[in-house]
Image (tube, rainbow over all chains, first blue to last red):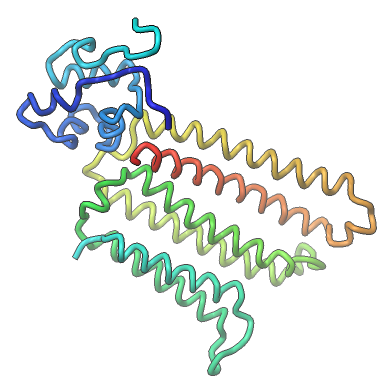
Length: 74
Length: 209
């Protein structure tokens, strides 16, 4: 599956939050661990709702977790 | 003891042998009906698998794969067995009619048994993973794409059947009794479901690679 134009800092943020496991983050957001793995690998772009859930799990805003890395450089 | 790739491979290998005996087994070896032995082997394997998924603790191998992906691969397995078995027995339906279809009844009975085993396995898996999130938005997206592929495959199979029936000379359609056509439509449905499960399993595997 092709990569997505949406990058994220989930892996780094997990380690900065007491080495939170993928399973713990998945449970906090109501998704499977494999979805977190796919997100971290850049193979899956989350819905807006899931993006907010993940950001809230870290106590941050969405733009602190996700960023645009598409061709237009926006 | 945990679920491991080697054990999983062994189950698949025995299932392959059982299916081969079930389809090709028409004679007797040492006084034992080979086809009936194939059925017995498949049933034993199904119960062993059910015991394994209900009793054994989960390991890393199982945790690497999401519940949705497990279900997709289980679906591929069951649909491959059902479709291969059904197509292998299709020539038996030729010349049979509704109400007197003894071979078809036997094949139908085996397919229903397979469906029951599938439903039971799915239920046991749900119980096993009751403390985990079993599906999320990614699973739903994968399901939508797989539905689309299955739908396309079903249309292709039905159009192929319609074109074959519509454009073949009459003398070449001696095999096409109404009963045979009915069974071919069922085979087309099964083909559509197989493509759906294959697409699902492939997408999960791509996400994980």
